Image (cartoon, rainbow, N blue to C red; front, side):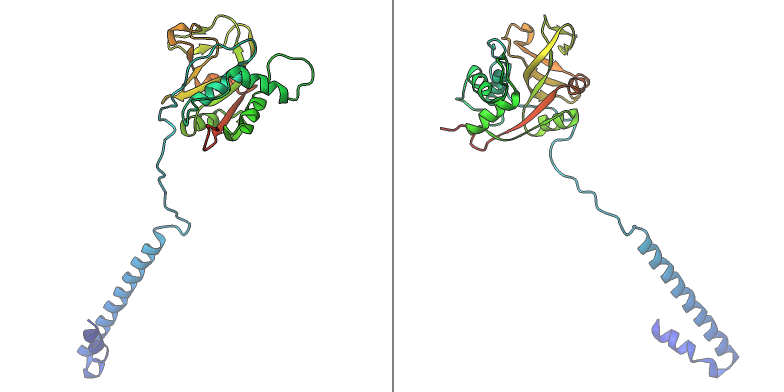
Length: 247
C-alpha cells in the first residue's frame, strides 16, 4: 500500500491523466486517514476516564440465612438476665465455650463493677461484658442502635445480645411464632443467634423451656420489631477472644 501511494503522488509530471490519478489517490489517502482517526477517537471515548471495575467479593449476601448453634435455654434467678444472656452467648457458636462462669456468677460479678452506687437489682450489659473481657473470653465489643448493622453482624460474625424493653406478662405470638410486644414491658437482656432470608431473627429467653413451650424457650423477632426496639434499646456486638477458653 505504501509503494502505490508513493508512486501516485509523484506521477503528476506525466500529464493530466497522471495528475488526476494522483489527486484521486491523495483523496483516498485523506479519507482513509480521516476514518482511522474517527475510529481511534471512538475507541478512546467509549469508556470514561473515571471508569472503575466492579469487584465481586465472596461471602454472605444480605439475604442468606445464618444460624450460630446455641446452647441450652437457662432459667434465670431474679433480675439476673444480663448474666444469663451472656452465659448463653458463651455457649453459642462460633467458638462455643464448654466451661465458663454460670449466668448467676456473671451477674454477681457485673454488679460489683457496674458503677451503680445505690442498692439495686439487675445490672448493666456492658458491666457483664467487661467481666468476661477481664477473664479472657471477649476480644472486642461495641453497641449499636442501627438494625442493619446488628443484622449484618449476626449474619457474618456471631450472635448478638439485645438490651431492650421486653414483655413481662404471658408471651403472645403470631402464627409464625414471632413474639409480639404487648402488655407491660420491662428492661431485659436476651440472645439472638440466627437470621433467615427475610431478616427474621431466632432468639432465646432465659425463663426456662416452658416459656413458649412450643419452641422450648425460643422465639422469633421480625426486622421491623427489632428496628422499633432499638429506638430505645441497644444491640451488643461482641467478638470472642481467639482463645475463649482460658485455663
